[in-house]
Structures are given as structure tokens and as C-alpha cells.
Length: 335
Image (cartoon, rainbow, N blue to C red; front, side):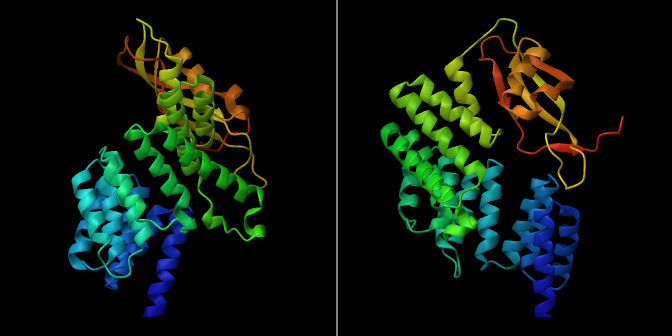
């Protein structure tokens, strides 16, 4: 039985990593029939992959009632509460995770700090982050990003700039050293979203603290290059460049383009769709803002596939307000 459960769990995670949430959900239900606690974790992650966050939360709420001593479920539930804006419940769940046997103290504490920052409890977030061992390489960049958020939140901009700059430099050294070949495991390097967050927070610190327009914009655009969905970076660009118009409206724009390389060897580059929220005078002007959020190689192929004017926004800075992280790819016809 143990081997069967382990194999199912491994297969479920493979499905999640390969963006097969329906298959992962079926495996999660098999694990549930085997009465294994990992069923709740897998099913919840699958529901998130299917864009059903409320279903994921319901699964985890049932899970922590059934097996209240499994820290991973409380940690996961706290993160999903936080993503849903249910911050008091998030903090409570994450605090519970930190009390349970077997918990990954650094990871649970980092997730708690994220929830505290989201509710502007920045001093509490800083105290939580102080409890993380600086030698925890696997989350050090993430912890630095959250520390920079908290320091910016309490107006300690010089410190926020130094923390973010040191983390960016450490990442650059590790990356330049060759990753696995240098003995630095890839799992110890931050993802592009974390590095984007470091640049965005350094940009905010530079702008709020020193009003250095050029340096702040450079960091903001670097963050967008790494993760176009980084909302802090987008807001910095809008604020610093601040252009308003009495004719401006809030648009939801669906763009279509051609990706710059095949997704699989031997295939042709696919087409893609993405949906952006933009304040602009016209859809064509909105497309101009969007182009700057896309890779240089695809910009010439972009066009407005459809749009919806939501409402007038004459007093708000023009620019991108929401950019998705993921793309919707599709196979182009031969003609």
C-alpha cells in the first residue's frame, strides 16, 4: 500500500508540473479513497490549476478537520486564504502550521510574513522574518523580497534598497557561477517572479527614498521583463511617467500574437492570446502600452483581438493595470 501511495503522489505532482490538473485531480481522488492525507494537498493544487480557488479552499478546510496535525495542509490553506484576501484566516492558519510537528519553519514563517505584508502589518512581518535563519538558501531571496516589502511599508527606504540590492547581487553571482556546475543547486536560485519582486521593491525604494526617476524606472522595467504580471512594477511605471487624459477609459484588451520560438522541438511557433487591463484613450493606444510588457521578439506580431470598454478613467494615469502571468497558446494554421 505504501508503495502505491508514493507512486500516486509522485505521478500527481508530475501532472501538476506538466499542467495536467484534471489528471492530478483524479489521482487526488484515488489517494482520498486510500485514506491518505496527501489527497487534500493534491486535490487543492489541482483545483487551483483549474482556476477554482474556492474549491481548493473547501478541500483544505475539510482536510484540516480530518487530519488537523498535518502542517502542510494548514500552510497551504493559509496561503490560499491570503490569495483570496481572507487575511485574518490566513494568519491564523499559518500560525497554526508553525506549531505542528515536522513543519518547515522557514517556509511556514515566510508564508506568514507574506500574509502580514498583504495586510500592511509590516512591523509584524519584519519580526517574523527575523526568525528565519539567513543560511536557508532555498528561501533567502524570497525572504529578502518580503523584507524589502516590509521596509518600504514602514518608510525605511534606504534599508529596503540595500536588502533588495544585496539579494539581486547574490542571485547574479550564483547564476554567473554556473548553477549546478558550481555546486549551487537550481532549487536554491529564486524564480523569475521572485527576482522581479526584488527589482520592483528596489525600484520603489529608490523612487520613494531618493526620487531617482531613471534608476527606479530601470528596476521597474527589469521586473516587468522578468514577470510581466508584477503589479508593483506596473504601478511604478504609471506613477513615475504619469500621463492622464480626459478621454481615457479602462479597457479589457485581448491581444493575439505569434510566439518567437517553438514550444516543442520540431514544431512551429504557436500563436497566443493574453488579456490585459489598460487605461488609455483608445484600444490602439492600449496596445502600445501592452507591447512594452511583451518580449521584443513578439511585439511586431501583436494585434487587438477584442476589447471591452469598462468605464471612463479621466483622472488615473494611463498604462497597464493588470497583465497575466501565463499565456494561452494555440496552434497556428499552415496558411
